Image 1 (cartoon, rainbow, N blue to C red):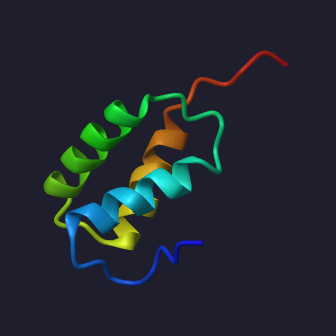
Image 2 (cartoon, one colour):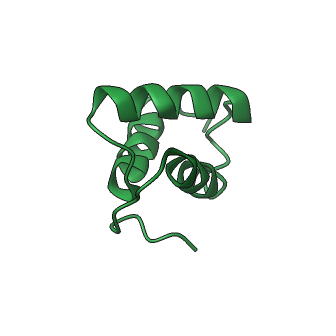
Length: 70
């Protein structure tokens, strides 16, 4: 399990955390390549590759998921 509050020193670890967190949310339907590409862009734009940024990126994705039928 990843701890999203600990600092991350490298890009690969950040991307691994993003992928790990995304697995918890089936509503995130991006392909792994799309997820990695968008996570990289997010980290570059918002100032770093940390566990906290990884969680914020996932929260951003979840905020833009279209709700399913009720």
